[in-house]
Image 1 (cartoon, one colour):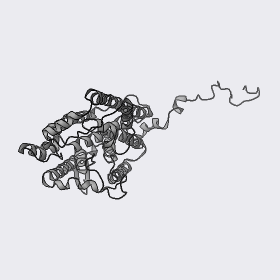
Image 2 (cartoon, one colour):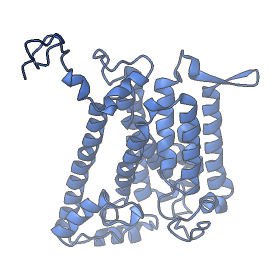
Image 3 (cartoon, rainbow, N blue to C red):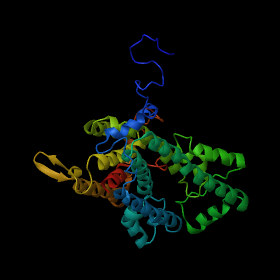
Image 4 (cartoon, helix red, strand yellow):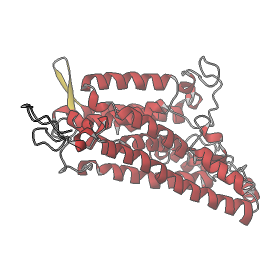
Length: 373
């Protein structure tokens, strides 16, 4: 619309130089793209810092340590079960029992291994977003998480289906091996996947199930019955994704208080969020609260006494290993007592006395070891 000839005000034409241009790029940004401005030292316009921190590379080494530990557990559980903590074979050679009460706690401890996997998953998947809290980083983490787990699980269960259903025709050789060696610890009654449709359903349910992880078809068909860990890792990934988005909007003190409340509640209801939120809290402390060597967040004060966090870690690890040693070597009857002091939200609604101790365990002693380390 053209202005009247006698109009002295600014032109209403859309191409007038008096009207400031609209910054469409600025207005198109979502609320998550502004998160980076809330993190000290980060700017939403900065493009020089990549979502990568070389100081966190040691986590790759920690994850790498779990590979030989898992191999040792699988090998010894199969061929030398008496040397494995909490195995059903409680008698054996003297050296086997000595390993059971000593090195087994450190190097082939199944509850410590899968607890570490869940914890490290939460500790690492949040790092890119904490370094670069934008919508693109968040979307990329969520999108890639599924594919990084779906494809390996699908390939694994297809191989299991081909080997046990078609090539071997069942699991009788496992039954024969267990009977020949006297191994009462290994599970020989694998679920033999009957058809391709059942195999597809097993793959699908690995990422759908929210409870009873260890009794699902995919895990029960897997030779070591440990594929349920993928279900827990996948589920807890979204616990971390949802929780980490509030970090740029909250004060450090309230994040810590809220995380402690979350962790205590997760412990009470016997949820894996107990481990995963702890991993997120430690990642937040390292990235934003200076809890790394040479920075101010490496210690805290108890009155006038300055206590470094590494001492807390040593105490946690010592307490965790001491508990495990007592449960294995001194009072094996108390091994699972701690598991009963949670609420059984899926069982009775009260204390979970009906828990099956042969299934996966979320243990306090392993938690102390992992967080201390």
